[in-house]
Length: 212
Image (cartoon, rainbow, N blue to C red; front, top):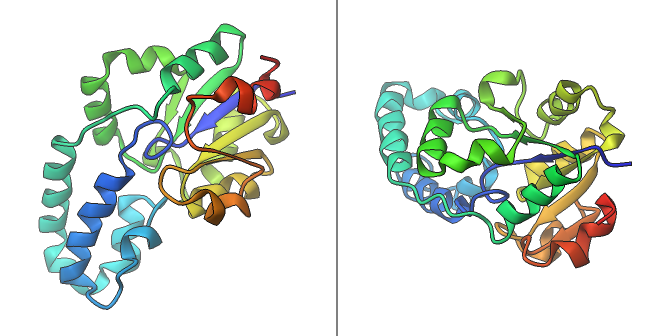
């Protein structure tokens, strides 16, 4: 029986991944001109981990990179993936717990709350990069989400869009629902138990999982 739904943020709750892809595509032209897929390579990783893993040769430029990211995020458009608010509200109505498990940090979440004051009422808990010791594809964030509610991983379902995120849900031994918002349905099908385009037709596609 599913007792909790755990959601990534970008590409799962908000349709922001195309914006991040464009940002990192532009940045990587300067830092990694020979890696055209850099933006996809880092999805699901925290900024701290991205810097630690890939920017050791650019330490002097890291402050400038962080300034670029902060400026970019201050002007981001936080548009819901179609149907999410209605879906989340219905899950809470029937007693399911909802958590966000994101590699974004607290500063980013403040921007989300400013753009959508109602967002806090849609979820029970928001876990951010500051709460995790390891980044996706490690299952740490999803295991912590289940632990917060006192549930077993098998009692939870995880929603993800990136390959690293989907691998994290699978590694946590949770039912894995893939959102084809960032990658094609075909490319994520092998990492997902169920694939959906968005939440516009959730009742017909996944409502049975929650007794709806």
